[in-house]
Length: 199
Image 1 (tube, rainbow, N blue to C red):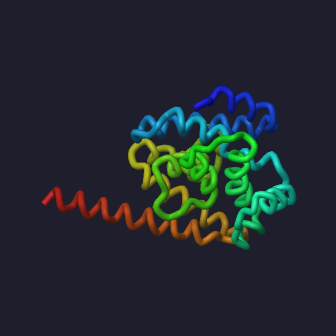
Image 2: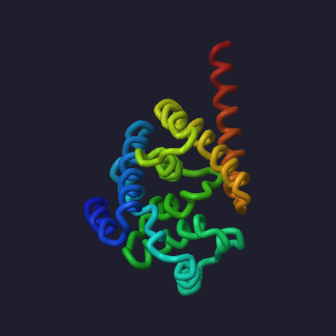
């Protein structure tokens, strides 16, 4: 990993607010990786570069997606807040020569989530919600849960995200619904296993 190199690069190309957010996500990701047995250096690096796509406008991202021959669904194409993730991941590979598939997948799905996410993908999704600069109703509760149960914290975060999307009348990506259902099913299995052990 070349975390310091990418940190300097992101500081140069992002505005101050977005760079501070990226640094916060990197730090939160490193904490979560240490807490849940992940690769701390890879989590930090993924957090630093996760918003690489936000340096471009939505029009630029659409054009770059065409140049890279990316296949984007119609919902992602219409929502800039979703668009920067998959296109950003492709641009990390094309422009920065980051080829680690774990990092690229974590960046690609950090806005919507998806069913059966890897540990690193989960960490980056959650770190994006709980980094120190975030201040929204419910964030302290997510941070508290994140110290004890990764999937429960993720479920709380995705529930709040889905409610926010619905309240604002935005398009809800089906991957977010799939992610929520996957987490809910996984937590129910954990509860059943724990209940069986107690018998």
